[in-house]
Image 1 (cartoon, rainbow, N blue to C red):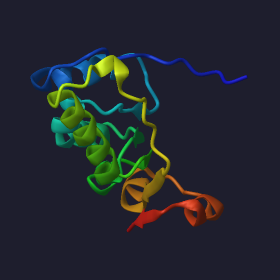
Image 2 (cartoon, helix red, strand yellow):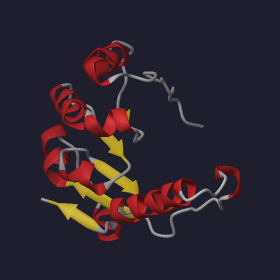
Image 3 (cartoon, rainbow, N blue to C red):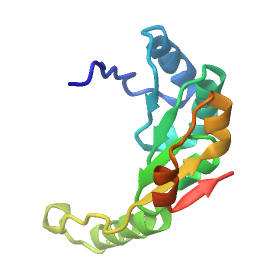
Image 4 (cartoon, one colour):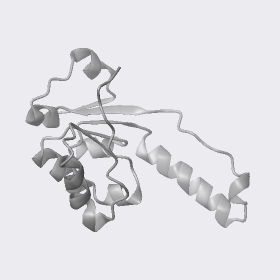
Length: 138
């Protein structure tokens, strides 16, 4: 059984991301899991800088975030995700009731690992994990 506790920083507005994360840091967190929303995506540079400054390994959803400093990302390709959203919005704007639209799920997920961040945190990523990555950022 894992001896870990999950602590939510809550829904932060872009201007208070640092404060929200700082409050979570005060609770002795060992890592940071960032769910993507319009607020976190726009605030990603602040979140990444704060996490790196406080030596917090981060896990994110899109590989673009790993390229910007997140330790590990695992999620659908952002382009595919954006296209699916655009198609759903188009259907709604053309008059389809949102409740009648099918639920669409990604069929492909990408694993990206940022070795530069890993080195800065003093972490070693096992070779078998690196081999499974779709992208390894040096």
